[in-house]
Amino acid sequence: MDYSKDYLTYTKRMVNKKRYNHTLGVVESAIKLAEIYGGDINKARIAASLHDVTKNMDMDEQLELITKTLGPDAIDELPGGAIHSYSGYIYAMDYIGIDDIDILNAIKNHTLGRPNMSLLEKIIYVADFIEPGRTSEESKICANIAYNESLDKAVLYAINVVVSELTEAKRYIAPITFETKKYFEELVK
Ligand SMILES: [Fe+2]
Ligand SMILES: [Fe+2]
View 1 (cartoon, rainbow, N blue to C red):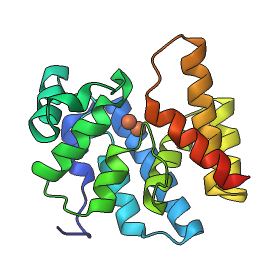
View 2 (cartoon, rainbow, N blue to C red):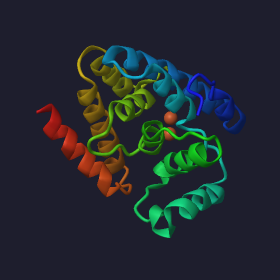
View 3 (cartoon, rainbow, N blue to C red):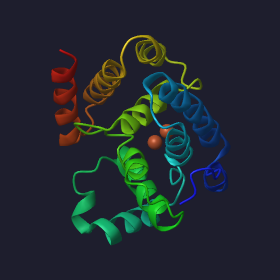
View 4 (cartoon, rainbow, N blue to C red):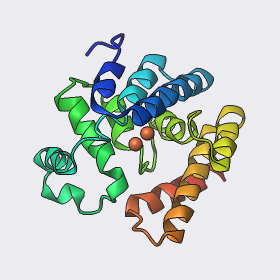
């Protein structure tokens, strides 16, 4: 794969304007975080450019993409909100030609996270939460933690916000979310 290529063109073709603007914000925040934490700028840019590439794709098409590659069980524990992360990962790999496993993991895990995320995965997870288009108080607090304090603490902050929102809305929470929360709680102790 070509690390200097502009992968935003794929996303621009496939998502609506709102989602594209969000993507531009995630690219900006991801590059900033990569600079601060010594991450690979090109990989951060590519993963951010493609993280929501299938967000507006037809749901049946997304489910087909996931199950044909990962098997029929792959969607069993997957909350609705994370389906695009998994379909995006398959799409980036099979249709765009991304073969960098760290970039692929960053796309796959940007919604749910996972214990022991790589630096790039944490950068994309947090950038998605703090990009300039997100104007909630929580996003601003998380950005402040990420830019001035610690990336791991920013991950934990974002997970806690997600868990309390899902709990309040009585929505399904994937087991991996609790595992990730526990892992980062231990890590920042
Ligand atoms: Fe997403
Ligand atoms: Fe996103």
